Length: 248
Image (cartoon, rainbow, N blue to C red; front, side):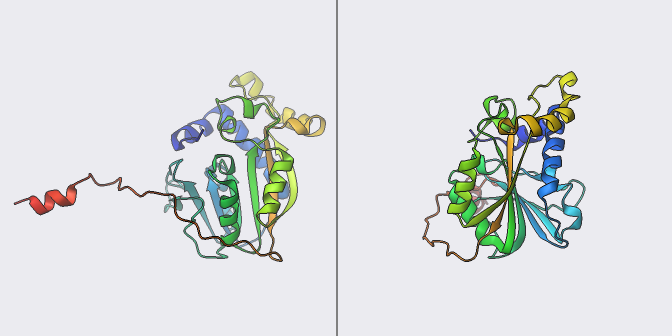
């Protein structure tokens, strides 16, 4: 099941979404190696997390998959978001230093193709960070949040997929140890739950966060792939050119 851009924006506008964003951002920072003037791409629905990361970058883009839909980002500034096909990203080889995938890999039609395309556009020694639902976690079992949709992953599945696509897995951490409840009384305890859960029950976190580095010493298989996409004009009514030709 894919998440729509409207559903994702609505979730992060709620108190539960705000708490989830804070918990994931706090877990993300310790493994985010600062690289001044880097080129950063967020793939999936990453704007809630890009807002706190783009200050020191040379440039930052938000690539949003076509099946999800796109929204203008950042607000009140020149738009830096684009609607893309995740297996055919509109960038040349070795164009970016860092990719952050959030609400992306679990919805991919072909996860390996998505990671191979990310490998292609990353510079040598580029780094990838992925946030995915944890297969063992409670959040993956409930559908009222985006983390309850798509395919959840275990630690072994995630590291195995990265190795298959020429990435070297690195640091891994977890987040979302508090229950996905909409009750404000429980949300007030989320910070304490994160601290305790990371020590006592890390296997049952809501999401897994892993960093990986682009591997260069092994060739990436090259295969000619016919596009599975069918392009249909959406901004002009069908037959508009015919009407112009037949008009007076």
